[in-house]
Image (cartoon, helix red, strand yellow):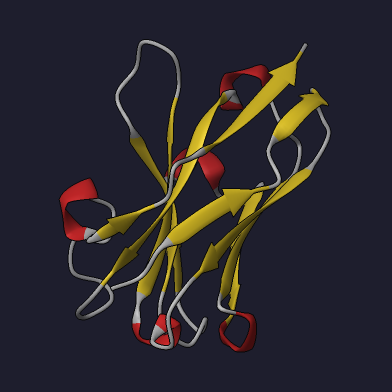
Length: 126
């Protein structure tokens, strides 16, 4: 089992950047596929990005490609989401999640993930 704690959210102006962190407990962090999702007010939770156990493979939602970068540091049990060129429509609660099993199988779907953090608020002002 793993516990996830997100941090790094906040208020930023459009065009700015933020880096979110997801700290994981436990000694098996490197075995998990890690993902980021977000949920805007009144909308369903949506997939942002995912990364395999080694960090060698990543996958992004189309609207985040080129602006967001997912990474991980297994020595620190931490996953990251670097967000650049932020837009007001990026305002949401951002969640990290951990999945067991093979990377690439349904990693864009919430049901694929076994563990979730509590979320961190990102607000982008225009």
